[in-house]
Image (cartoon, rainbow, N blue to C red; front, top):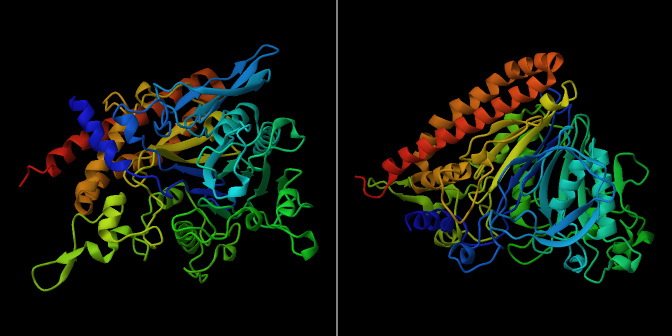
Length: 552
């Protein structure tokens, strides 16, 4: 009973409402990074379970995004084997009964990959970040379409050795079997990288009337290569823009223009080049909707682009069309720089939720001072109390309290695949969590990191350590965030400082005994994950004692 009360307290605060909270992806070309890494990232936001399920009134749905990180090993398959296709593969938990909606032929050999809600890397350093993007309602997928984005990612990671291969696989499967939304009726974007290239892949529905025997593609898709010396940001909105069909830096479905022409969204006689974003993205919508003019989309673009290129004058009120697909940063980026973006609450900008006027209280001397309770992590009730609405500039920072997990990945051409691919992974809120190195060549993650039931609070699950700390920090954020940083920052810095030595040792083992190298990287990654977990449980105990409401 006590555990149930705790889980109600912890999750209930973070799962009160569905709003415009999904993911932010940042992708960095190899010449735009400090060391030649190709980088992508993902924040799996809006991930809490439903309260009806939490109270025992729901079925298997609404369990939240799957944050159980595990390695699916490589495998050989017999001739005639089939791949089961499931609905909502991203929203599963230990008690979930998966809904099978179809099956497709299996290939003879599949590669090892990491499986979570949105699978993110395979043994060949192909890495993927996901972000849901807006699409016109008329494109709402057909009930006959079965390929959700997480299913496409999982299949592509098991079959592709390069980013280009992965895109072609996802595109072909979406066309043949139909693209299905995982999030409302929305389209999807995947940032796809390998050690040499970075791409942005977008896929849209074709409307509710499509059937597999219609003879038409069941999806619209296109992909655009990110220039090696540039950075692209995808904050829940299409970024591909104008398509050049003659350029090798674009890939697309045969119907990429056809649906727009049929619906009057593009006139080929106009003389204008075809713009994928303008054709399939709603220009405007109701407050809080997903549209090209949504404040919660544009504020993230403005913040990241203005930070990457500060000498350029970026208008905070400029429309989506004013932002280029990608920009050349004035300073090359490290993994830590991308982490800093993921942790951003827009501090020091007009978008900071912890700096709205309502947070300022009397100091007893005739002046005003920020309340120690001021926090950037607000649920619906707190926003209403502070006067923050979906069209407010401080509505949605990059870091979210209701994030399930996320990562920054780096892949490197000069290292063997098992060493070159590393995911800096975190659980829960990126602003309060710690990033741990997980190498793509490892055999297994710790059991506690493979364990997560959002309906049962358990110290056997690493995820709950980070979620508990996030909740407790938010009780008195202005003070408690410093307690957190005192524990987190030295440990995270240690992980980064050890990286060169760890990889040097791994490379020596790779040359002498590859099997020993795999064991070494597995043990090292697991030790980092377990050290972070232990540190956060101890921090949770400390914060509980310091900030409980019976202290004086």
